[in-house]
Amino acid sequence: METHRWGAVVCHRRFGKTVCAVNHLQKCAMRATRERPRFAYIAPTYKQAKAVTWDYVKHFAQPVLDHDVNESELRVDFAQNASQVRLFGADNPDSLRGMYFDGVVLDEYGLMPPKTFSEVVRPMLSDRGGWALFMGTPNGKNQFYNVVQQARDDPDWFFAEYKASQTGVLSAEELASARQVMTADEYQQEYECSFEASVKGAIYARELIQAREQGRMTRIPYDPAVLVDTDWDLGFGDLTAVWFSQTFPTGEVRLIDYAEAAEGLPYFVSLLRGKGYAYGDHWAPHDIALKEMSGNSRLQASRQLGLNFLISPKVERIEDGIHAVRMLLPRCWFEADRCRDGLEALHNYRWKVPNVQDPTGRPLPVHDWASHGSDAFRGLAYRHYVKRRRPQEDLRRLQIDHDPDDRITSGRHIGRRIGIAGRVGRRGGY
Ligand SMILES: Nc1ncnc2c1ncn2[C@@H]1O[C@H](COP(=O)(O)OP(=O)(O)OP(=O)(O)O)[C@@H](O)[C@H]1O
Ligand SMILES: [Mg+2]
Image 1 (cartoon, rainbow, N blue to C red):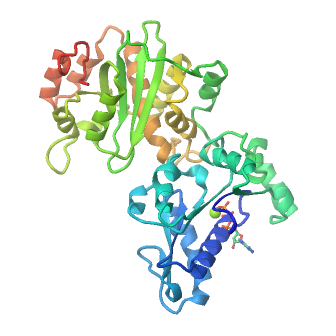
Image 2 (image 1 turned 90 degrees about the vertical axis):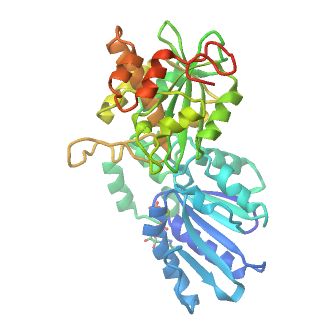
Image 3 (image 1 turned 180 degrees about the vertical axis):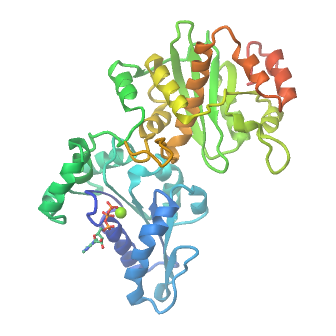
């Protein structure tokens, strides 16, 4: 690992990845010779870093420390060379901004938002020519899979793979007992490092496989004859996700583009403008009308930016929304390149613990990076679903009835704004 700048290690469950990561970072920190060396360990969530890794860090650092660790920042400082090892969660990329690193381990990289490395971590390695080590157990063909593919073939990368049948870390009895309670796919994924097995508990697995097999994830040109609608999931301090779709009279829905970023509305307004599509309706979830601390709602803020949102029909029960997605997916075509991140989110949207009900008797999806793109898509599917169920009603009007809170918007909904800067045919602005 020390002779390569980039490394990928695929390991079976309980192999000792996290312990290895912690010790590798600590060793590098203690031996670093540059000024104020900085090393980072990144887990998919801050909570995981704190719950699991922090104990390991303290355990392995204690023998060489003569002072306390920094509990609030999950950080150890080594006095002899002013180096630090600090723990982070990929669910809070902002906590990393502004830092530099000599080396970073991304533990369970496959469970992080797909752009964690390229957008957040990679730039932080630039000042120092820092290294990165990607570790994990496979969980489908995601960004970890991509890195592993590259590492296997590229001599500039360190690569290692540890399957339970080869390492001897877990006893034969333990493996046999695990096999009994797991499906063959699950066992292959968790213990034999297989990327082929699908994401465990994936909610839309069947529909997405079908779409791929039927060739509905492909190149799709933008058809200027049909207006582009957008469906949003608005992040409050985290990711905002937007699907761009064109709905044809045949009922076919073409997903021609997707965007996500931890940015505010002004960013998205210029992004929408930059794409140059002729837009139809912009649909936002109902919480956009909630008043914020400032006393204004996001609906008002977005209107000031020239973006006139309609409010998607409220999904009362999450399973109704999921059902609507399953009904819609067979009619969907995806522009595979531009929708890659959105499709990644749909692929990774999964049940908390498959087949196990929560105490109220309802299974719930995991809330993580994949929820944003999936929630936005659920809004899209649900408005199609409601419209199909009640075809005679105009969704916009329906919405107005259900949205007494915001009379001004309602007026605009009815009036359908025409165009900005004289461009006719743009209903929601931009
Ligand atoms: N080099 C080692 N020698 C002995 N025991 C180890 C070693 N590395 C890890 N262990 C022990 O193995 C267990 C699993 O370690 P660790 O949590 O690092 O595994 P992991 O691969 O990260 O597991 P998971 O797949 O659950 O994330 C722990 O009890 C740990 O103390
Ligand atoms: Mg681990």
